[in-house]
Image 1 (cartoon, one colour):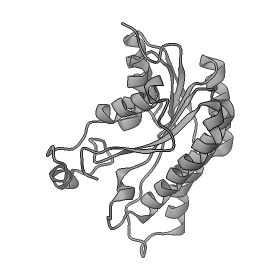
Image 2 (image 1 turned 45 degrees about the horizontal axis):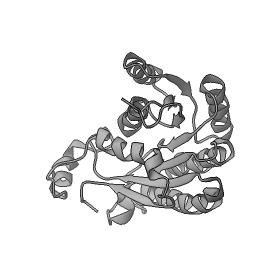
Image 3 (image 1 turned 30 degrees about the horizontal axis):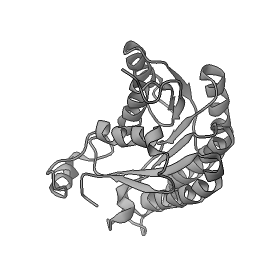
Length: 243
């Protein structure tokens, strides 16, 4: 059976677990050679690589902290050396601090914005420089930017910034037929969703459940495919009707 991403090379940042892992595995299942990026947790990243290889795919794990621009540049350089020229970049790496504005510290602000905004900005910069014409860039944001939730200013503020990066970069890369889109998951079964919130989250969906990482990954795979060649500058929701 033909695989829609055969011959493509992809980087997925923050892909040793959760939604990032599901995206890496789905892109590999569609035929892409995948760089599994991680900051810590080498064993978890290697498990993703082993799963992909065990299914007949191609993958390597590369450590890099995308909050540091020099490490972003190294990630892209090592990826090209390992797998060749890049076609797909999924900027998924991120962190969350849930705390009121009144209680948030400068250190927490820097931690969240360094990873979620600065890290994505410089990931997109390298993607703009290195992704081949006709490529695909996807940034994982959150459906939370369309909702009103206390305690989320740092997280949603950083994600709001990257949604604007997506809109601008889609214009800048359009002449090269590179699409740039945001993907916004809703409440999803990962370790970022506290157990205490899951029942309420499920009740907000018309499906009466929370999402699975694989369901978000299916949307990412579409955005990375040729079928999405006419979709750019968009924020595509994958939230089970919550927003």
